[in-house]
Image (cartoon, rainbow, N blue to C red):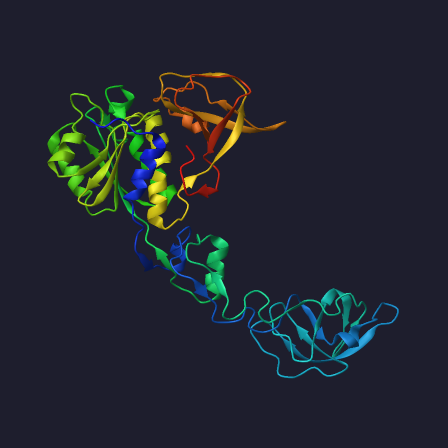
Length: 417
């Protein structure tokens, strides 16, 4: 059997077999957080015409300059232009146009006087302040110029970028398809939440991993496909694996240790899977497997709830991000100073659940509490994974360690662990 890999080497090997999803056009309102698959070049100027930034009166700046309450300027109003209409006349000396926000500014005008600086008459307007000379006109192409590359391939489509696409009449942007990620757990002792009597009586264990993984996949950008819970039999596992073959990625939890009823590995062998690795030098989450089943990547996670979440963060989330078209799959790590001593064993790389806060001399971190791999509440409290190198058994208070912030939007190309 091959020697266990480091977490970083395992992450790199997984991504070597992960492929970006094909591009397709989807409705604009469905594209939030998708990754753009092509450059978007503007076919128009935005604004397409000079328009008013507020309600008021379009005028010539030379006519308005010097206006005050003591020396008002009176202009003739030649027409009114609401938003959605266009002016029909050019402004000449001594003339103005009643105008509203967003309406096109008439030729000859370079100023919009806000209405609170005016006194309106029947066919005239009196300007009592000249602070708006040369202002309140949005110029043609002020936001986007025709022919400009507005968004480049690889851009993540957030709300503002969707708005830009809408302004260019892009109803169906070309994005990388979100991967369909099959999920299933295994174990005769596990039931889903539709059997509360068995859970609350203590006869069975709730399948918390299934629902956690569904949420993690969705948040990472994938489309979860929940295949339920496989029994501890070869037949049940074969059925679940076969049902996953129309998805793009398969993630399992539990069943990959060396117990008498852990059948995942032999069933994968029966089905002809290419198995890449099976165990890592890390805690929590040493029993992590990876391979290809019918060309579909499979990542096997351990069954303990904390181990499942930590290994998802390190291995599955980057894989999903790459499949979605993200160029930077891994979260970055930042240095933090421990506020308490930490003692660990055995000789493995440790990923401890921590809380990072601002300190006097920079970020500080402490543990969430007990670090057992079954204490799921430690992940509820955590906003970071504190990384202790392999063989570092004692880390004193005040020492600097690396923290993978779970709420950090910044990402990088290589694993930070």
